[in-house]
Amino acid sequence: MKISRLQAECEYDNSDMEEFVNCHPKQIISERIPVPIWEILYCYKTARGNDKKAVKYMILEEYSWDLIASEFKNYITEFNEKHPERKLSNVEILDSTFIGKVYILLD
Image (cartoon, rainbow, N blue to C red; front, side):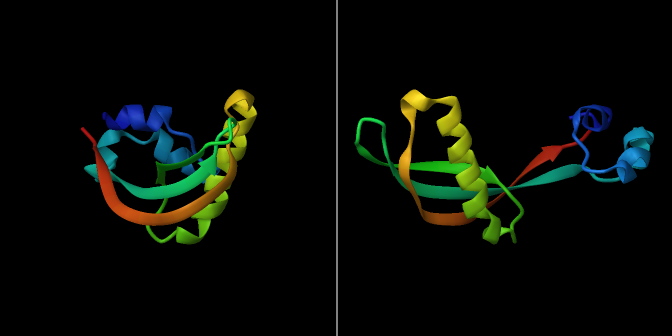
């Protein structure tokens, strides 16, 4: 990914980032962006009453294990709102594991 594309397309959390957004790409010395990945094993009941197990992957900081349940609950709530015909109920996280990082290489 080109650094200029990163600067143009990313969302920023505050106005203090303005200097970063507008700096020349040569001023950025990082060569890759780490993306931490968590694996979430969960079970649920389908709209037809069938019990299922599934796996989802979440991008969340390695040491943010305490946020997994709330982030996953938000995902399920949004999924159920968008897909009422496929609503998931009795959702329970069985296990969450930090599995490592992938890297986005910068040009």
